[in-house]
Amino acid sequence: DVKVTQSSRYLVKRTGEKVFLECVQDMDHENMFWYRQDPGLGLRLIYFSYDVKMKEKGDIPEGYSVSREKKERFSLILESASTNQTSMYLCASSRPLAGGTLGELFFGEGSRLTVL
Amino acid sequence: AQKVTQAQTEISVVEKEDVTLDCVYETRDTTYYLFWYKQPPSGELVFLIRRNSFDEQNEISGRYSWNFQKSTSSFNFTITASQVVDSAVYFCALSDTGGFKTIFGAGTRLFVKA
Image (cartoon, rainbow over all chains, first blue to last red; front, side, top):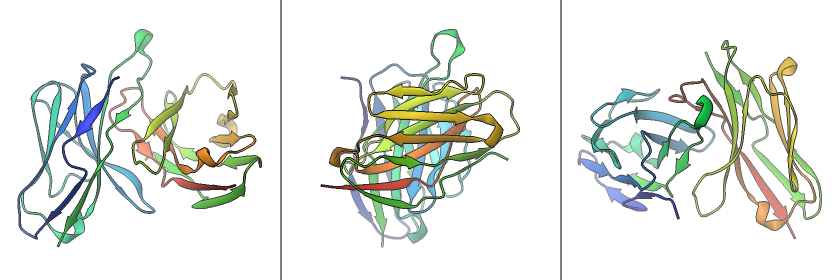
């Protein structure tokens, strides 16, 4: 069964701590994404990567960084966590389909981060 | 700028009722993709349907159907004879052809009561 696995379902951190959220996919997908989900705002794109060591900013990259050292792994880093980063974080992956059709996103179960 | 609006925040229906979830989008692109995803209480978003901008055919999959109308920039989702297992948050999404920046609506939470 194909999967996107996020390392932690629930985390509680203190303001100023460095936080790592890990994501691994086993589908050999080129593209990986980090979104945050907040009530009333839907999903907002933080960063994405279309290849190993490549990364691009999404719509809300401030306060975050990412790392993609291997094709299957995409990490989200909060250098100094703040209370406004309390949220649900969703990792996703995708790949193009035959004929250039845009592939759908496959999501992990999410990591709910609380910053105190 | 691209935008997806799901005006219905929450909908509550009784089992076996039909329900339509609205989605209105904005884009200047002539080629784009629209999606619907379901997020059950477990949290993992699941893909339901993809439609590209050149394909306005409506689609039916079991109890689910989708109505895509470019003239009104809408991509509405209807569940016929709803069931308790349909209770979830449903997201409409819009993407350019590159697929790197998919924009999601705020979601509609559907409650189906037995």
